[in-house]
Image (cartoon, rainbow, N blue to C red; front, side, top):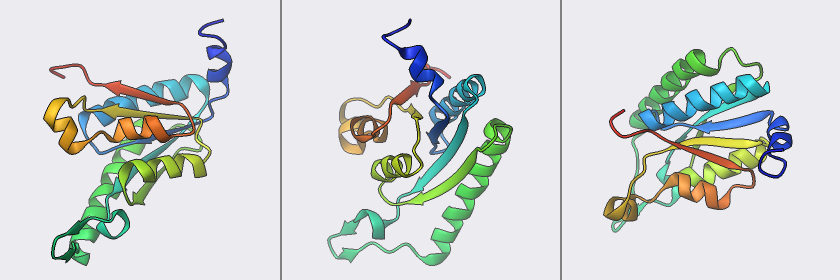
Length: 161
């Protein structure tokens, strides 16, 4: 028995959520999740979060920041195309796999979606930011790890990849 019942826990994984921001680390996490899902007979829910200022509370000193409807539509269409391409290439052959675009603050939206969909595991890439960059930008992965009800596996792209 590995890690105090790890094998039993792995056998119960049927639904894996994979957040993506379409970056190389996110693609690496999707590759990892696909291989894991294939071995476990699990499905993948590939999701992208559009950080909508009306749902995330992004305000500027003069009032609310408004994204013009055309720009939002363009962003959503781009996200949908990217999701579908990755789904087809990586998860499309896994039964029950799906894609979704979420609106709102990234970490909160991901955690809520995982809970609603009863995800057994979240697999996500991390950019590995440190120092001032981490302080200013924060870490979506770190927030998800701290607040998700299910286990979260983070992957990091090796330097130079």
